[in-house]
Image (cartoon, rainbow, N blue to C red; front, side):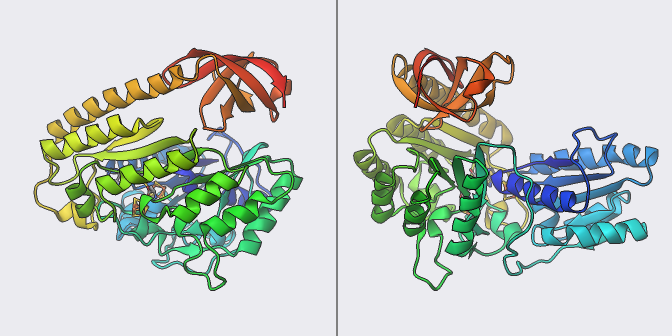
Length: 437
Ligand code: SAH
Ligand code: SF4
Ligand code: F3S
């Protein structure tokens, strides 16, 4: 059993962990009482995420007491934090394996060793090794697949722990990426999500003169592939050339996740984001000029150290002006070891919460309004599965990444249909099937 916290990067690492375990002869289970191995793949982006992991590690103790043969492991970003592996080893002596994001490929050896003797095994490289290609993966069934195009991050935004736990930027070779996607298409996948912390700096570390725009063109040429998405792109590296290639690559969906983080130029500077409020607004304008239907979503942090009322109003203002299709909003959480954690003028918790509520309320109303705008339109929907609550309702996504629910039977799954949108809710829209495409 593998439990995953955090972002798509971690979700995809879990697919590799599952692949490695399967190669050793294990079968997946979702029931911890059936499991021979339990792995927690952790996230440390905010303090809350870490506290939850500690809670969970604590209650696994009982499971181990009932089944002493059980192998318990903890891995992922949290383990990469300085001194964290030692802390876990001391506080959670029932853990058998503690390994970092750079050591995933060593899981089979770690398990073999753990079976031979019962002392805890700790394997945390503090630096990235070479990219290990050809690891087995057990992907989520069927329709869309995550494909890593690069690992790590060089940006060092002053609030962020990711560069500290995921290492420097390393791009995979084009040929490896293309071959992987071609295999996926042969297996029936029709959509890929290209993954990286900053996908538009793809290729900067390679010597064959390819950038993200060039990679997109090559992926776009793969026969049989229908949809391409990518995540995450950094506003600073979103060049005109990239916008042109988005407009010209027919399979690249018109949805761009473009984290702004804050509206105030002064705060953006202290965050080390490398763009101003004005530059971000210009970028959105350029994108919408060349891709008129572009759906743009974002990430926002409230309560960064030194954020004044006026700074916060800049964030509210940019939300109004851009009209994002959606936003992930976060309360700033100081991460030990990052520069922002040591900045004076930390915003008091009550103020952070109050700003957060105002922001959420505004964005929710914008998100809903965006859904209302879809009423009576015809959308191309790729059906991905049954809806969570009702097996007679199928759910899929538009190219702009809107969640769509439609009464239908399971035969639509994996297929593209035109759908007439008849109802708008806060987090999704509903509609009726027109015809298969
Ligand atoms: N690589 C992506 C996102 C990585 S983390 C990017 O650059 O945009 C996902 C989001 O978590 C970030 O966009 C940011 O909004 C949020 N985040 C990161 N560190 C945080 C912190 N210390 N406190 C609160 N939110 C944070
Ligand atoms: Fe973190 Fe910034 Fe890198 Fe994104 S770009 S992972 S926010 S350091
Ligand atoms: Fe992702 Fe969390 Fe790591 S957001 S990169 S899993 S710290």
